[in-house]
Amino acid sequence: QIHLQASSGRFVQSGVLLTLACAAFGRIFNVNDMAWYRQGTGNQRELVAHITHSGSIKYTDSVKGRFSISRDNAKNTVYLLMNSLKLEDTALYYCYAEINVESGQWISTREYWGQGTLVTVSS
View (cartoon, rainbow, N blue to C red):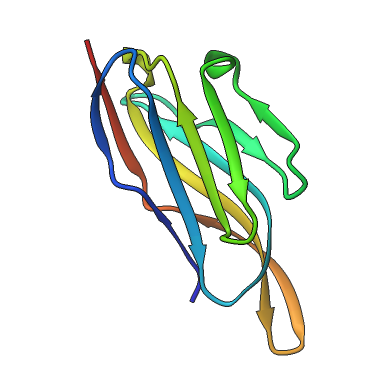
């Protein structure tokens, strides 16, 4: 069974640097797009950063210049480097992966989500 395992939540002060990691485990053929989303209290889940298998990247405007997404395709792992953290970055962070899955002689594409990692930024 395929699942995503993300790093544990952290309580940090504003301005510090924090890296989240999320790895995909299971019978994986390969991993297509990977991404990080977040959901703050009272807010809808929003895309933070997205990276394709070939490395094309996009960020939401609020994190441009502060956050950096990367991936290790050999380890089926995506990272989110968060710099200059602000109070408004406090949220549950979810990793996402679109994975090609082996099923007998077939390959199917499915979406998977991590369990959510709480990042709390204090002043």
